[in-house]
Image 1 (spheres, rainbow, N blue to C red):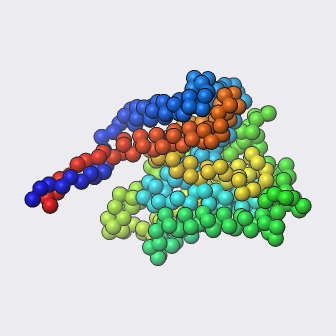
Image 2: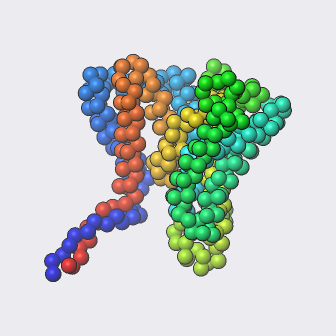
Image 3: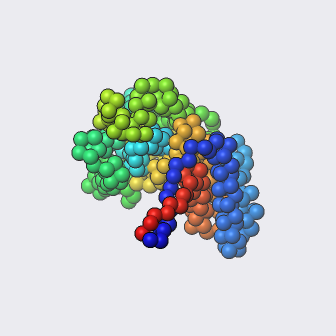
Length: 360
């Protein structure tokens, strides 16, 4: 019998933080080289394009603050991914939970609109967290008691929430701005605005909330019984159950927290940046948050620089497009190349490809 080769992914346990950092740097260089070729094919200067990309993201105080503004929802959706994925609970519903948080925050705003800002803003934040959390918890309940795959339930949830928002903003929906041609609410009143951290910039308290959430998630995962139980469940669910861990509770609580964090991202974008609820409130912050978490190695503190990197890419792309005249589609392609390169680097640092021989 002749041997048959099979390729198998095997988890690495010997990669140091320095090794992961080097892999990320190499991935970024590779992404730049591929992007440079595409920019050249578009009859633009790659050097000029990259210089303007960096200037647009970090060229002055205003650019830096805008980059941090763009990174704020990515920190929160990244954290939503981290806490779920650390338990190998594959929540892919961050985009839907982002919008669910925006819906919940706006609903709370409509109920308590007359309150002063000091009372209204915390109520909006709480409403957003709870709404997103309930959305995540529903997927957790389906997994815990009916063994419904979390990937399937959360992806379906994204579509359901999208249809819910479309109804709320439709011509027959209760939230559409009267007389408006567009699917959007009326502008929210200033007493509901997230306080700004700097004058003449859009960076708001949502950024501080996101940083605080990173610290809280780190403490939960590393210094609480729940964090230990979640990590044990992620390593071996059957062994965790044998040790007396209530695995159903772990699944439900994890999805509750994960959904709530994504919900905070949605309400921050609504009440801190755009001030209207619209279907295009997110350009994919929920999905990008998954990549952010992977690039961060599922480290809640590492999510912060990873999110800032992607915030810089989003923010800097606008100036690159204006200064060099490259098509909008190309800027999106460059963002995708960077995403794929960094994701590939994470996969290759976490796993090695091993060839296994089997006899026929």
